[in-house]
Length: 169
Image (spheres, rainbow, N blue to C red):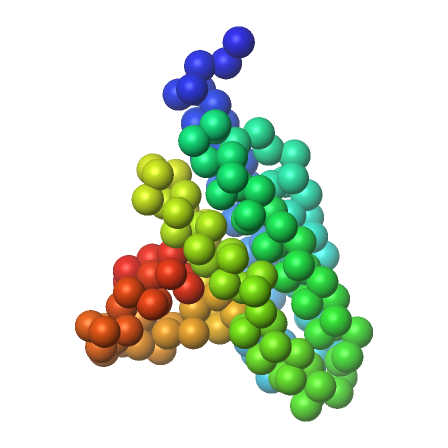
């Protein structure tokens, strides 16, 4: 039998693998690939996302976050569908950007942020999620990114940002 502490540690390690799977230090930021409608880059990002989703699917969460983990997995699966739609639409930049905006407004995007924020509040390390907000698909998960990064976020926007992004920064 695995202790709750050991299960939490294994879960945190798996989530760190998720981050390293999604990140490619040699790839441009996701929004750059979207803006350019670069099919090859969008396909590569979709494959990395699907690989990360498979890690989440194969990870047993601690009992106290099982529901959040399921919501996260469902959201990642749906966001993966959006990624593949964008890659398929490339090199048509206007169509890729339209799909990107739809992904931003999707229930999956909102669920991703909410599940990640809930997990963070329950003590799960979420550095990988914050990195996703800023690196891989920043606008899909955090519509307040510019305000977050600059520190100019209005106080009334902070609470809605935390729900979308799962972070207060």
